[in-house]
Image 1 (cartoon, rainbow, N blue to C red):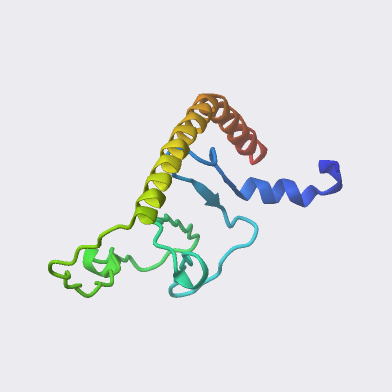
Image 2: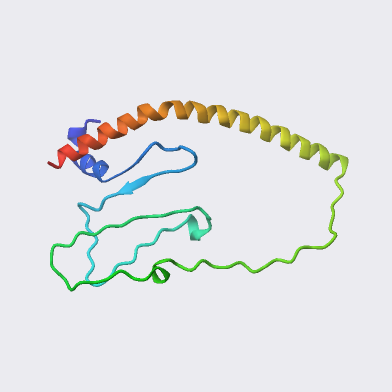
Length: 155
């Protein structure tokens, strides 16, 4: 596949992307609506779904900018209380008093087996993370160069 065969790909990839895919469990993804503007006259509300039916408890944040050509009446910024959504409060759960579970031998073996598998997993995960950390400087340099090419293409 040649890029010349699909000129729309250049435009698409210039408006969305992400940084190094995983570093300490954080991602950074961007989307520019340059060629597919979102028109509104009075207000706009943009939401993000956190997994199907909002079932995930991930910590997401976003920043949105809009650029306005026409002059308008001056407007202020809303007070913080009106900008930050109120988080739902879970009901308090009462602790069961004096509840203790005795483990059988089979349960103890299963618990010990799970613990040793977790220790092995964490060791291997740390080794993989160290490999990824070593690649970050090269990937970052590539991201910087890619960004520079994109900026220059808009000049």
